[in-house]
Image (cartoon, rainbow, N blue to C red):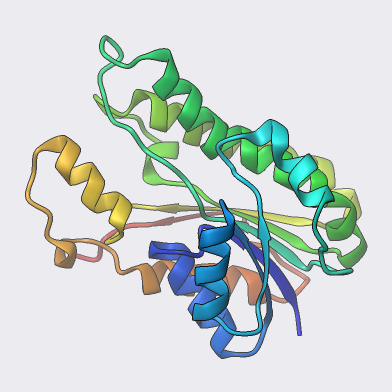
Length: 229
């Protein structure tokens, strides 16, 4: 069975993807931000391997993982975790920029760097769950969109660099998806939240599984997902 390391498994797209892969018997390594969340994930998905590292502090990820046991093999690294804080450029404090860039861009880069040796051996895959904001920025979305534009650049550069090692790299760009993050966005926008208007996390999970299961003669590089109605 393939071994997947997934961030953001606690809710939304990450939870839907984790449930899908768990149900079919794949081996999962779930990264949690703290011991409490790791325990919750282990109880929700009995038998999974959990590791603890705070993506809000990218500089400490290497230290955190060095204190824990990772599987000998990893076939895919799926970056789903992210944070968002909307606001106009005129209003956003440096701390808001720093927190979003750290969790959404620097942490995925660092985690990828640390796991690349194993991914090269397995000729594995890295999947970045990006956002529609990674392709187009709107008013009030500057910091979040900047982090996601950067994540696309990271994926594109990584794909070119790791081609010779057989590592596939995919960026998935979901539009508005019915997740707790989307509910927070609506609160910040001052709008009523109606999850039926948006993409179901299960649909996004389906696209990720499709990319993971694609035969080795091909790869999905960029995939945008939008609400069907």
